[in-house]
Image 1 (cartoon, rainbow, N blue to C red):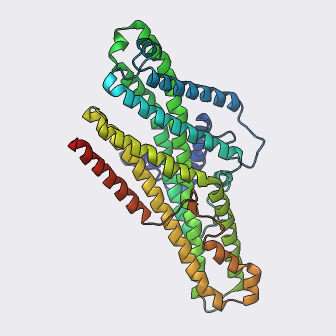
Image 2 (tube, helix red, strand yellow):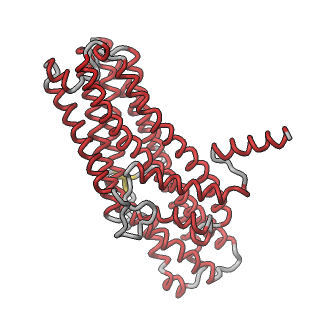
Image 3 (cartoon, rainbow, N blue to C red):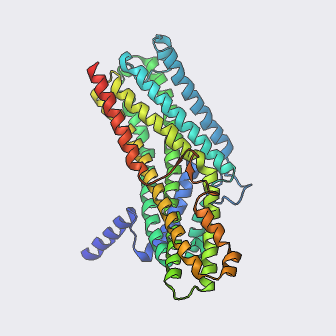
Amino acid sequence: MHRLSSKLTIKRLKSVVGLPDDADAAQHVNQLIDTMETTARGLLVTKRGYEQYMRDFCYEGYAWKNNLVRCVIVVTIIRLAVLLVYYDNELVSLVLADPIGEKSVGFILIAFAELILCTLSLLREYALYLEESGAIMQLQILKTIQRNGFNPNLLYLSPTENLKFQRIFIFIATNWTNFIRLSKLIAPIVLITLKMQHPKVFQDKLFAQMTILWTVSEIIVARFVVTGLLNTGGHLIILFPWYVGRISTLIGMCKDLLQSPRIRTKELIEFNRMAIHFLNDFTTNVTSLKLIFFYLFVIISFCADSIIFLAIAAPLPDEMKYLLMSIGLIGLTIIGIVSYSAGGIVDMFNQIHGLLIQIMPRSNSRLESKLKVDEIICRLQWPDTAPKIGDFCIVVRELFVYYILENASTIMLLKCNVRTQ
């Protein structure tokens, strides 16, 4: 009995961390996708969930709830802006419940908050615009998985890549969902704890009342801007392995064709079908999402750099300096990892291109012309897909290393310069 109880406990723990048994995987995935869709709906980052092809569908009450959240965000941005302009005004500090209190560091921290809030709010609005314009139709694949399971034919994956994607999907989706739940719980606790540290909260009744009022707005902003964008980022991370798996499947098909004594027409036709389908999806997504990449690499990178630089140069307590620098470095590291992963996709496309060049001399020229293999090869060389981040730099795998080194060297030089002054 004790042994059975221990096995059940281990089984539940594995399921919680995204490692369910194969027998329970299908049920776990169905519940997981339901949870993901419900969470996205609750955070107002989607108006139709994963039914993206139902363009006329909208969740009940979405419009007024989203407009209310927008109003709260705008009011919060205006509040921070007024605090920056009239920071020395006691009445303004009282009515708007100055969250910092200390004159020496308050202005800088409020400026940080304003910068981050404006950046994330614009990103949230752009994410909503992408859904409205039909740019995130690929979310429909999650409904396909929920209804049909991990069917390799529907997912355009080989059996091996399909099994890999299933395990990666369950692991990432489970832990990301747990992280979102935790952040929704922790954000209000952290904000309330910080408010309790303000000396005026227990000394001035009016200030305490205004603090409670503005804390509610800050919790709403944290939930729907920060946590909402974490949810959006989670979906991009979850779908990324699917694209990698599809490319790996194409590479495997090319290798099988190359190793065959004779190029079989049926296999070449199947490769052509899957390759064109993937390239069409990839072209659509790159065209639609290139501004997201631009925003990520330019705007958010600039914000992360600014936070680090100002944290070093500003007269802040050491604890606050380390906290702000950590936030900035985490942001830069995430961007670097995205660069590294995107560079890996470029390498995989180059690999397919090289294999196709070897296959072409052995294939039937008429069939090759009919299947438009030349077109596939040209598109793999990037002229049609525009695989540029924001159309301003080609992604290469080494960009991750260069990016981190450049930022690290700049930060070190700034720190040395500040210390010598």
